Length: 212
Image (cartoon, helix red, strand yellow):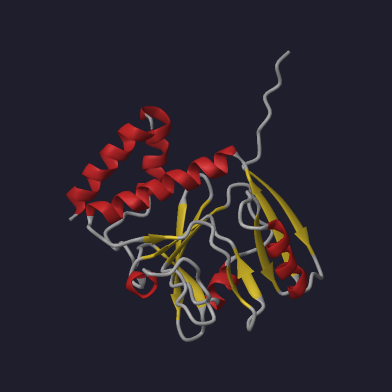
């Protein structure tokens, strides 16, 4: 008899009572060439390893964001899972993808980002299919990220930063791409599983042009 089993999209470990110094040492010891992503918030350390479904969704959303920038002739600086942290706040996280769009001219010449002096990314994307034990919204809000997308494998949630209190409000419209329907990205992700990624990206580009 064949028994169907579900494969998780991520593997997560949460550690408590971890010092900021330990988080910093782990970042150095693990290096940049790794699959795991770390997040630190008030003594909690999350270590996440993305698996197939997670990475497939992340990379395809990245393709869609790049296609938007290309079709709209926007300069986009991509930093992937850049380590976003501020020692002064003792908070940090490594998103699945992050982008400079409005602030792209300010970091265009940079290969490394220091949030103590540089602006945060304009858009951060997190894939959270098996649900995280660590809510990243307070981290990205404290770091001043203006827009945060969370995709759970079914729906896309968009959060905009409310200043000066630095909390996120869930909204139905992106500030970066105000014409983008909330269900568009999940819809094209589903389409890619039927038609293939190349054909779907072509269809998405045509759809973006129609929205302008």
